[in-house]
Image (cartoon, rainbow, N blue to C red; front, side, top):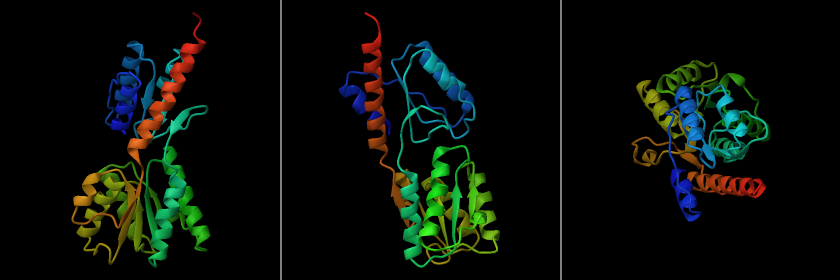
Length: 243
């Protein structure tokens, strides 16, 4: 994503200032405040998974600084954002498993407040309906996406009365943690239990037990498109500013 942002910005003669929240809402607020104080022309944001307060984004609007969200999108009205269609991506992942013969499919989803979490659940439910399988809410478990969160989710799924033979993981990080947990429980990967996820971790291809499949999320294109939208908004701002 960052490469897509930087390449597109450079082509349009803009400089990129980068700040990483490391999934801290407090740090995210400070970064946004710093960007605002430096009078940046616009901001591209992938929100922290822990962000529940959106006031710092609203403050950018007040200062007339355009914002484009990508990848992790907040639940806000009237925003500009770029994201993969996780509903169709999840349908692809679940249908793939159903075609492989799986009928009890678990899902380790993300925090409820994330837009992508809602889309994944919707895709999962639609897949069940399309395949004439009953939706079992106990097979969809939310996680805070930490190692401990993934382990708790796996514990819950493996304790389920209907033991899942396959699991859809929120992303590759979660899938790799879940696979390690399954191995500790003496599960044979791709025999006792299979995993599919959403690709955002190249190292998964070097793992001894990678997910069976990953849905591509095209991070470079997301970054590119987000930057193109932001540049369009910034140019619009210039046109509307009184000379």
